[in-house]
Image (cartoon, rainbow, N blue to C red):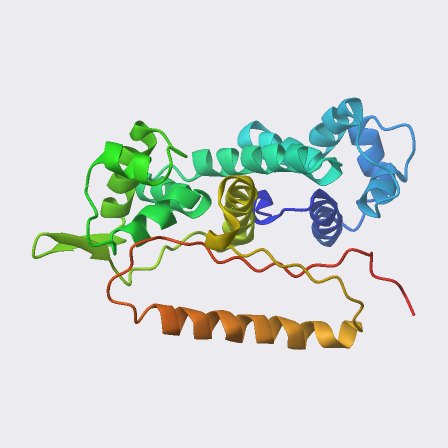
Length: 273
């Protein structure tokens, strides 16, 4: 089992039990409880089913019972903390810890660069900035143009990563974006994308207070819909974004870089009918 393919530790525990049971028919919840020094024989099932959380003390016992070591144990610990966190900032912190462990596992430098570019908003902003007629391959200029949202050193590192991954290239003395796509291991794609969306959402909050209303548009709609319409709404949002991208990409002389975000999410928990 590859623990790095999981983002929910309860799902991992369920698959672990099934995996061990298939290997050895004598494996049971009671057997695991003995190995992990748990007080109740059904504790693994209770946690797997979401009826119990793991405290710090029980987390160590589960790691022992699961026979996890090194980075596997680090990743499992961070995953538990991320899943059980109530505060969004705490969830974000532990998600970053999960990615940090995963990056260590992928020791190849090219993969580290791919991880970096996928979770940092500034890389995508700078990539698009190369479309500006006055773009300068200068970290100070880039930092100032981004309203000093990143440091000069961060701007320099970002440009180097973009060049290395061939996400930008120079033609006739002018830098511009390429059609090169960033490839990341499938098992962490969604976690990386969550961190990237989070980064842009934080930029959106910042812009809401710093940018004048004639330069931005914030609109919200709170409405009740049947669950059968969710897929249709998502498709319409995607179609709209594709249309906007096709239309705005035809502009030959952009003079500003904008971020277009649309969020569509439930405010209530899914109710059984």
